[in-house]
Image (cartoon, rainbow, N blue to C red; front, side, top):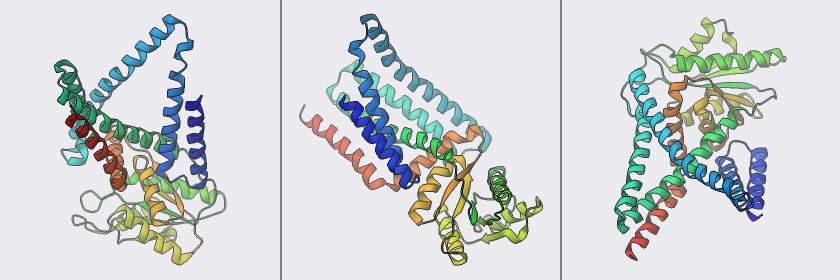
Length: 334
C-alpha cells in the first residue's frame, strides 16, 4: 500500500509540475519515480497469485531485463554502424555505437564477477552497475517525457515563431534537417494565419567559419523561394549556440512586444532540451519538433541527454561520485 501511495504522490507532483511549467526536467523525474513506485507495489502483490503463476511471472521478470539489455545493445551497435555509413565518422555519430559497446562491457564485467566470485571485482561491478542504473533511469525519464512533451500542443495564438538553425552544407545550402524545421515553422504560421493571426517568423542562426553567409539569411531565402511573405521574416544572424539563438531572439521579441508569446521550432530529438534552455533563458514559449529520419534519432537523442545530464552536472556527478565512494568504502571493509 505504501508503494502505491508513494506512486500517487510522485504522480501528483508530476501533474502539478506540468501545469506550472511543462519545460522542467523535474517533471520527467517525478514521472519516472511514480512508475518505479508503482512497479514495486505490483511486485508486492505477487504472493497473492497462485504458485505456478508466481513462478512464471518471476521467470519473465528475470529474463525480460536480460534479453532486453542484449537486444538494446545490438540495436545500438547496428544503429551506430548505420550512422557511420550515412553520416561519416564524427564523434556525434558514434554515440549510439559507444552506448551499445558500453552495455556489452558492463554485461561482460557482471558475468566475470559472478564467475570468478572475486570480492573486489564484485564490489567494483556493483558500483558500476549502480552508476549505470542511475544514469539509465535518468535517460529513460528523459526519453519518455520528451516523447510526451512533443505531444503537448499549444492552442493559443502567438506573436512569433522562432526557427533554430542547425548549420548549412556547402557553405550556403539549407540541409534536409534544417529544411524540415523551416517547413514545420511554415505549417505553424499557416495554422495561425487560418485563425486570423499572422505571427512574425524569426530565422535564428549566425555565420559559422565554414559558411558563406549567416545561417538565418539562407533560412529566410529558403522560405521566400517557397512563397513565404518576406515582410513577415526577421533575421537573427549573430547566434552560434542554442542558448544564443534563444537569447538574441528574445531580445528581438521583447523589443517589439514585452508581452510576446512564441513558438520555437527545432527537430523532435532536440525539442525537450530546447524547451529546458528556453525556460532557463526566460523565453516565453514552447518548443515544437519537426520530424527526423529514424536512423538519426538514437545518436541524436543520446547527445541531447548527455547535454542535459551535464547541465545538472553538480547533482548528477555528485550522485555518481557518492555511489563510487560507497563502493570503495565497501571494498575497504572486505
